[in-house]
Length: 480
Image 1 (tube, helix red, strand yellow):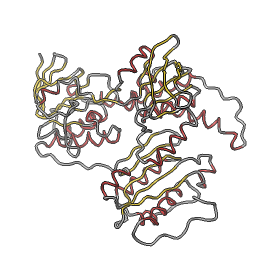
Image 2 (image 1 turned 180 degrees about the horizontal axis):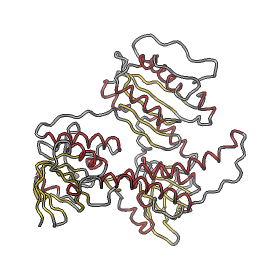
Image 3 (image 1 turned 90 degrees about the vertical axis):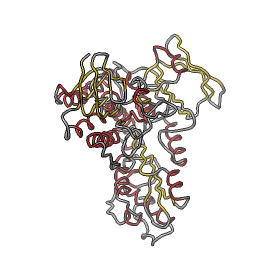
Image 4 (image 1 turned 90 degrees about the horizontal axis):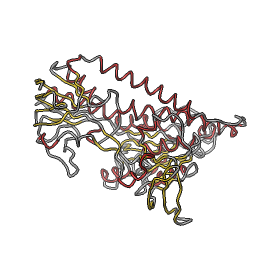
C-alpha cells in the first residue's frame, strides 16, 4: 500500500472542498484533495445551474402564455421537450467543465481519486490502495438525495433531481413528493412546460417558509397552477403498467388513484458521511451518526477534524458551503490556532414564480431573540405599482423589527424580484441598520423595491421607537 504523510487531507472536491484547499495551500504544500466521484460540484452537476436552466425554459413558456394580458397575441405555444432538455444538458456540461478545469489545474500530486475511509483519527485509507497520515482532516463530502422507503415502490419510475437533467425528453406526467426547494422549483417548471404535475408533502411545509401568513399565501398561489397538498394523506405507491399509481385522499372526493409516468422524490438530502467509517475518527456523533461540530469554527469537538458544506447538514447552500470551506480551510491551516469565522447574514432564495426569499432571522427566531418584543410590517404586491405594470402583482413581504432599538431583524417574502430584494435586506441586516436608517435610503420610482419601503413604513409605525416617516406616494395608487 502506498503511504503518504500530509499536513491536511480534504475529503471531497465540491465547493467547500475546493475553497478549503485553496486556503490551506496558502500555508502548506503538503495537502491532498480526495474525490471519490466525478469532479464537478453538486451545484454545477445536479443543483443550482441545471435546475435554473429548466426554470428558464419554463419562464419563457409562461411569459408567452401571459402575453394576452398586455394585448399581445403569441399564437399557439408549443414546447419541444427534446430541445428543452438538450439545452439543459449542454449548458449544464459547460458549467461542469469549468469546475473540472479548475480542479485539474491543481498539482497532480495534490489530487487523489478514490473513496476515503477513516482507519483512525489521523489515518485515511483510499480504495485499499493508499494510506494517508494527516495532521488535520477536513470532511467536505457533500450530500445525496434521501428517499423514504415507501417511495421505492415506484421502482424504475422513481427519479431524483439528478436523474431529471439526463432526460432526453419531457414526460407527460410527474408526481412530486416533497414541496421543499427542489420539489417546488422542478415541479412548477415541469408544470409550466406542459407536464401534468401533482405534489404531496408531509407536515404542511411549503418550501423553507416559516411565516404562516406567507405560507398560506404561497400555498394558494401554487395551487392555481398544479395541485399541491403539503400534508398529503397518501395510502400507497405502486408500479403499474404505464407508470406509477398513487392512491391518496384529497379531502373532497375521498380516496382516489392517479397514475403518473414518473415519481420525483424531492424529499431532502442526507450528508455523505455514512461510508467514511466515521466511527474510527474518534469524534462525538449525534443519534444519526453525524459529527457534532462548532458552527462557528467547523471543528468537531476538540479534535483536529473539521466538517464543511453539505456534509454537516447545517446550511446546504452554495454560498454557505464556500464560506464554510474558507473557515475550515483557515482553521486546518493554522491549527491548533482555531478561530471563529465570519458568517454572513442568513440569505436563501427559491427560484419559483413568485420567488421565495428569507433573510436574517425567521419570525420564530425573532420572537425568541427579542422575547416577544418585536413588530411586523407587511406589503401585498397585488396593488404595488410596478408589479401591476409588468403583470407580476402577486405576493407578500413581511419584515421584522425589534422594539426599543428599532433594529431590522429579518424578513420573508413570496413575490416578484425576491432574489434582488433579499440581497438589499440581507445587506441591511448585516450592517445592523435600524428600520429608520433603511427608510432613509433612496428608492426610485416606479420600481418593485418601493414595496419594500411600504413594508418598512408599516413596520416603523408598529415599532415603539422614533417618528414615522411621512406618507406614501399617493399619486400612483396604493402600495407603491
